[in-house]
Image (cartoon, rainbow, N blue to C red):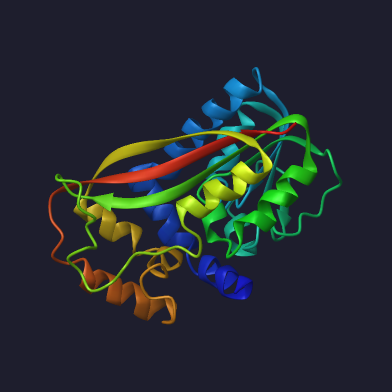
Length: 240
């Protein structure tokens, strides 16, 4: 499973960057998450682990609030895009760090990609110092004006390896958490752009190769029009 995730993101660098330049969505999520985490950390962090850093969009955000931010990702190709911070190619299920190494661990749009989020959460708890803060963001999907899932009328379900509820439950088992939902107005065109990212199109067609799954997603979403709402669940926890 992890090899598949790595390949999906290795294939996604250019489309991911194009989507981010267009929407700024992952930067916005990182800024919101960093703000929630900072409130519970009483200000700036000494060190933050950006777990699932991708091309470093979130790393740059957390670097504004931390003396040292380490970018970790399973995809070497994604991390090549980042030059402004320490980079580690690794799996957040098995963190290559000693206990008590960080006072913040951030999973900005990444923890839901783990088949078993609880494993990654236990690793986050291990490397966090007492009083350290963990944060995660997981997608709740897109809804139209009356609150209906935009995929309800289509022949595919948009699914992550782990759902937002599973991510939240894993964090609740290890930390005292606070959670909420962020909502973003977005266009149907940007929903289609999101699914030009091979790793995101895998939510719809996980067994197809990158080019074919993107083409299938484009066809599936071709009739989507207007403005929809994208929802993300955020969860922040504090270590004892």
